[in-house]
Image 1 (tube, one colour):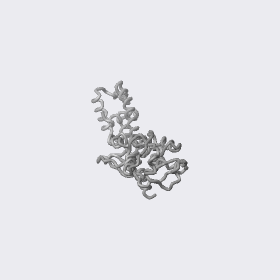
Image 2 (image 1 turned 90 degrees about the vertical axis):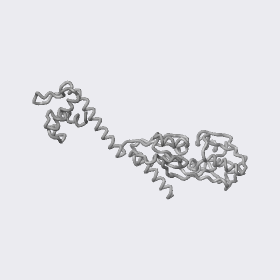
Image 3 (image 1 turned 30 degrees about the vertical axis):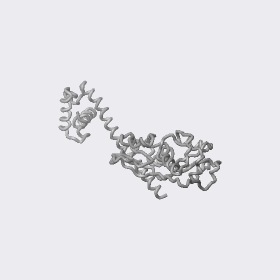
Image 4 (image 1 turned 90 degrees about the horizontal axis):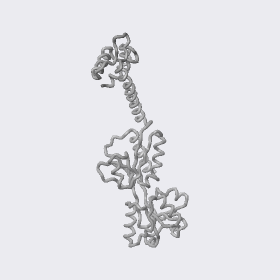
Length: 299
């Protein structure tokens, strides 16, 4: 059973004439008649009563006609849906990210994307960093934003943002007015850390160890937002990515002091499957990511 057969059959029923139906579908009348004959042979029952001047539906013909209308309507809906996808009137993009990227980088990217494509749905999936490459490879997300370049050769990645790890403290803390501090100045301080291990935390641990200074992590919390709040309350100090505290630093509710001997610049990467076939929506989001990269380089 072919789509063309159903279309020719439907047109004959609607036009009540083989010749008029042929004109509507831009075929000859014999071609339309042959197509309908083959459809009847495939079904095993006559669909039209041809004994009258005007073709009349048989009982089987009525059943086939009803289904043909639904099938042809679905075909038209598919075509319209594809047009909408291509014109970005619909579609979705799935992005995986860790906590800090979800909260402090993605909002800016999504706003930029939605200004251009407001009808495309963006879905954000939060995962720990070491899980993100697998999420991309398993096709659970179109892109992942991660704090290190993925090692898997089946992934392609490019840098999106350069950031640095900084020491944050309450403006009321005794060290807040210092132009800088040494690691040894922090040996008696209490620190707050994220309870998910990360490469940044390892860098801090190594820096303190090289100076033979104890790193007193007395409290581990689940989110950076909570860490920032506890630092404001002078519960302790913390090392966090600068992008996570831009707003607090501007408002003066937190301050940062450079730590001599501890510098950790990090790069955030966008990754996708190598040679992936992107949907129109995903391709548009990729363009936004690359534009953001270019803007970051120029600033």
